[in-house]
Image (cartoon, rainbow over all chains, first blue to last red; front, side, top):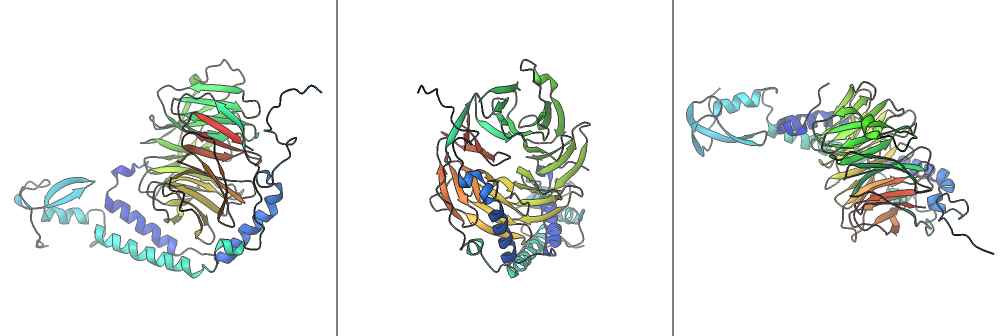
Length: 73
Length: 396
């Protein structure tokens, strides 16, 4: 498997690569966008409660909380 | 084969056959040459089917692209934000800088979290690579590679090694980490990958045994760490590849790459085949990152937008942009659930986008120069950003 250097390819080589790739891609099987977006939404809804960057986290539980000084009480 | 009639601007000896006559001025590999019409014909036929010239290929490419857009358009029945209308808006975020990691002497170009969620590795233009403990700010290990720009770095899944991508040497190396702070790790550096141009990105696959690299030479490659052997190479980009990301899905054997040809490509790791290509950005793609479920990915570009692509719909489903954002986006990462998209920009800020509603939720200020990389920790508790201002910041 040769390693190529894209600078050595001629314009014709690049165009041929592109045409062959496009021929393959036109034939792909696709889903409806509505179905895919629903799935993304469902995935997020399932995980969002655990997502501390979204929901926030209490100072005590935050592993990155600022190291406080000592308080004399 | 008779001579075609053409406008001859030059008359003289042909660069190819030496015969004197009217010459055509053409370009071969971007070099101007003067060939007689016979040699031009010979050249055009070399390696291609009869009649296939650059022009016909370009026309075929345009026709196929239109067809592809049509096919994709047929299934586009709704926008992402419409699906998300009923979902409640993300509340005000309480994210702020919790740690500033100082220690690099030049631009920090890359960073990566360890799976233990507290350590991270960062690499800089001054050749230094530092392993930090994110909780204590302790510098656990440091390696100095004075004559290199370490453009990419990655933590091994085991946490016992790091991979470094070299901007000047064109290699990707692996360094085993040691508990002994005084050990000179630079001597244990092992070269694994060899490209013909700079290494822009590297990542370990599911184990410490293989690494995937992307390069300025337009290719990506999969390597065996132990032997340094090339296992698979991936060709399809027509310019520098700037970023890559491995699919998080357990059954997935794919990765996505993005580059200066404004394209992002999804690849099958075993066959080397380019599965899908997306060409929507208007400028270089600086970063690509998979969505946590593995069914979509986001890309960040110099055109100041970030875009979300769904792999099963085979199309772009959202563009994260604002008229007021004019600087290029250099890096993106998703929060744990995928609700938020963090994007670092060349205007020194990090914009936080609501992935579903396609709106900006927040801006994180603090860095004093361009953001080179943003990365969410493995358990989603923190975001780390690396910048040209020589520091890294942890936000939580």
